[in-house]
Length: 498
Ligand SMILES: O=c1ccn([C@@H]2O[C@H](COP(=O)(O)OP(=O)(O)O[C@H]3O[C@H](CO)[C@@H](O)[C@H](O)[C@H]3O)[C@@H](O)[C@H]2O)c(=O)[nH]1
Image 1 (cartoon, rainbow, N blue to C red):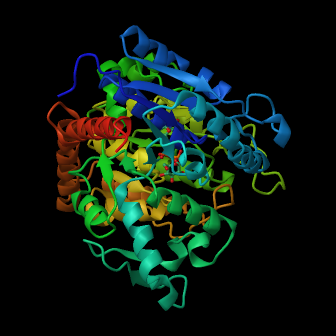
Image 2 (cartoon, rainbow, N blue to C red; image 1 turned 180 degrees about the vertical axis):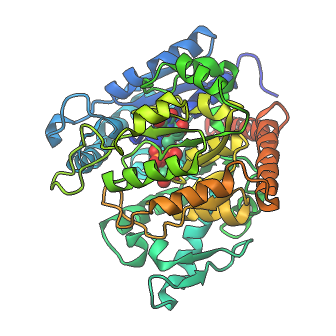
């Protein structure tokens, strides 16, 4: 039993500087603070500014949460002042510089940790030097992986058995051995750094070594969603994992005031009233995450496809890069079919959001009936939490693994059919044509076929399980407690000098 006088457990949270990593890590810190931990988010000055409002709100609620800022060497890398995450980059070159600058956080972090000595550091997977910083300081280090446990298991199987080396053609399928489900992939879906060694292979190998040497990993997922993989990870891969999500549910208590850093590009009330005017389950929500993904040509095909399919939609057009320019500069204004916007606005068929959408607010609305996304893990877990079937359209990173998870493991989606992995910030080589877009949208929206009805049912069941996992007594809630208890006992052991 903890004595009343025992000091609070202090955890430092050190997120990576990509939107899809920062957002869930901030939620994670807020979640732990709500469980009585002193949570300190260690990030760079402009990222502090970006997320200060939700943290202030939590402080007003009495939670012990705050920031510590590390200087970001933007200037040293020729980045404009304030460019401290990929959301503020406007071309591909800046993105590369950002990665390099992030590597330089090592020394300031070391200095900070040696002065402050928290009870634990939860850091993002993408800092391969993190073990050098914490080892020797005696601070337990835990890795937060922005993706789910499933993609870890796929990565491990590919490393162990290299099944992709036994197929000749890019379009040839192979089975991913040793996993609880039959998972088929094609070589064309694999990252270039898996198929042949490059700089990123080494970077990720170092990150993995660091992860293996860590105390364990926490994931933004819940046990019931990927039970077989959570067990596989612990038993076969012999590593510790805590499923503590969906962390976005932390925002749920105040869903109409969701602030997750970035200011939304649409007035939230007009977005909600547009949704209020639509029938339940009738709207398709389309978003491809926080990074630029699609080409101008693809944008046109999506627009035509949506118009033909005739289902209501909310379409988030994030940043589009001009892939033909050497610098991959951001396109200032996007070209849509003539009269498209007027037509969909007048008929109230669609709502376009240029920039940043209040995603959680939209996903939670009863009018939304399906979600087309790029299979970024946060999008998936947020879609699952909203009980939505999905249209999967992966492009890069581990997104094709995540797509298999949706299609073959939890079976709540249908695929748009892209099979061509491209590196982040490279031009997608495949353009899905308008007829295909319309066909896939029609297959899911307003369809009464058994396959789709079953998919919706399963999606709703997973939503209920997600809610249950997060509530008091649920698996994620208990895992947060178990994790805290374990860290407390580590602290006692180190204090007693054992
Ligand atoms: O207009 C928007 C767009 C995005 N989001 C939020 O931004 C996050 C996006 O995260 P995710 O869906 O994971 O996409 P990425 O930003 O692309 O994520 C990167 O990081 C993920 C976690 O490691 C990986 O799974 C992805 O492959 C990788 O691209 C989610 O929380 C969204 O709710 C918004 O709130 N509004």
